[in-house]
Picture 1 (tube, rainbow, N blue to C red):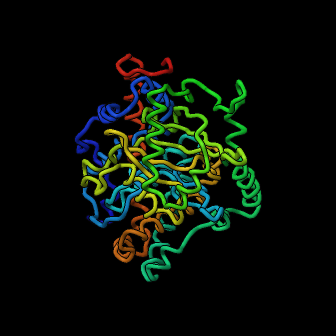
Picture 2 (picture 1 turned 45 degrees about the vertical axis):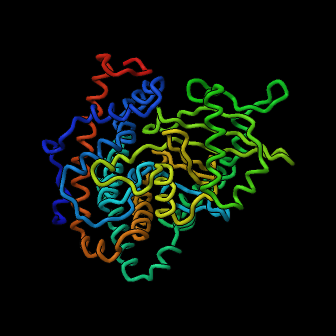
Picture 3 (picture 1 turned 30 degrees about the vertical axis):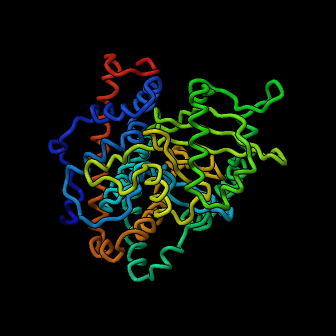
Length: 427
């Protein structure tokens, strides 16, 4: 596969119908939540793109690939990069979503990131020239970092990380100072104690999670038993020291959550725990895991639990991972568990838009580091080369696929308008 071929997109060769692919994912999901998912995806081409990882997976698989494998993030769009707290309570800039992780061709992650920059740019009024520069800057950053890793000892690649200063170093001093204050404020709020202040209330002398139907609702007895089984089974996937810590908490309340775009309809629960000695609050998020959207095109996961696939992929890709992550299964359903929020600072499209090139540069560095941990950095660097040919190819592909994404979004909107696809929002 030549580097110029990276630019090519052939709609006639995709071999599937985008709407059928979206609806085909509904089998695993809670049926009553599907209209919310469809409405969120139909809101704009950007929200459609976020929810359509399965569509892009099928499209990427319809074309030739390099055969140079890494552990794919699987959904490496620009808003799936953010600040993440390490167990030592440091903030690192890293990937943050791993539901679709699986070994596969490195360029599939790069193409999804490149396209997301164009789609997000269009959503936020970024002119085409600036979007082109953002894609090229991301690719140049990825290339330069990969050449660095190609000559670096493996252990040093694994120790490498990008902290807050590394992220802000890509911005002008004025923007960096403002962003640093904003990050500090958000990180302080996005903790279990902050979540307790925001999401809980005292009712009949008992602390409970505040409902916000249909996005946050209390579960019935059957679902409560399911969550208790998940938490009990999850103990085998975390260190004994972590389980010893969690044994000092008791579960006070559980709600079902509706989160994100692509995840809507999957079973997601928020468990509110309280430390038995001091009453300190703690939240765990429990999320159902299904097969990666790439498995039908590559190969099945080597893990017999998709929660294990997600968690182990996360550990492979991230420079540091939440110490509470783990997995379990109940019946035929797989789940993974993680700490809720944990100082995570998630970017906002409207804020990123004016600074898309700078943010894209940082994302390129992170993706290169993630890929170098599991793949052959020298092989990737050799394939990309030292010039800008791949940069230009990625710009061309990103625009061509962003156009395809708009056509696919229009198809979903039309299906909602005719009533053939249910939506919680009237069109």
